[in-house]
Image (cartoon, rainbow, N blue to C red; front, top):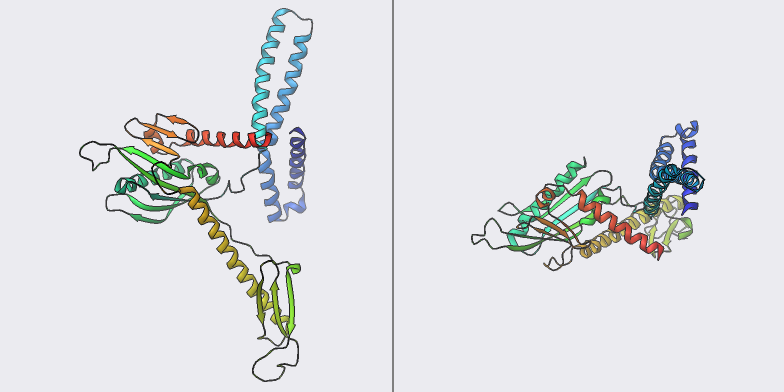
Length: 356
């Protein structure tokens, strides 16, 4: 771990040297990329600096304990050793977490799709409550929220509502909200006071980048042949028609409209790129749809990640066994305690996997 940290420290120093280079400063895009890379390393490098400082002070305190000094001095030094050793352990855990592979989507904007599951109007009403909860949370984070689509019911709920939440770290904070949310409460329309159990499914999807299509020359087979068609000067006299075959996918494009082989090749390449783009977007859409299905399950009451129990005023996240008796605050968007616990749980799992 420490070899990796030293490498990152050296990389951080190099990036800062580049940020002072007039050639880099003069290139806006290069300067922005360099500044972004430095910013991404700043937290772990600063934490490593803190860690090295603690090790230095710990060594000095242990040296005092080992020396032939008066008892009071030794006791003070031992107390400092104990405190610094605890700091060392804490910083090592934090550094291990910072070295975990970073989710490439963490800084992306997200779509939050909320759909009523089992429970009829009460499920739809709770869907509206969740939409408001996430909107309130986004406002606390200074994020922007836009309603992309909604299907309201006649009683104030939503059969479905899709929010677009835009802000740094939106995915990293909201990705754990995916799944089935269960609510237990007495509906406003329930005259007998009976508690109902309903569910709402939540899917959280990162905003997709435009799919870039880059066609490598080595991936294309070019065949030329004589154009066919109505007679006229140049027809069937030169090998101007072009057939491009994209070897990885098997897609084939032909073009013979131009008399110039170069022009036909350029046209065919544009068509090939368009088809590859369409294919990539379809595959991306299929992957997103599969991810959405895996997130929300069937919406049955038993498939839940979290329960909101209104009579008891509690919120329970079943993945980590966390129960908070602060339901009114959570519904008002106070989600940080839940999300922080889930983030720590996720990091713990990843750390266990890397050390297994």
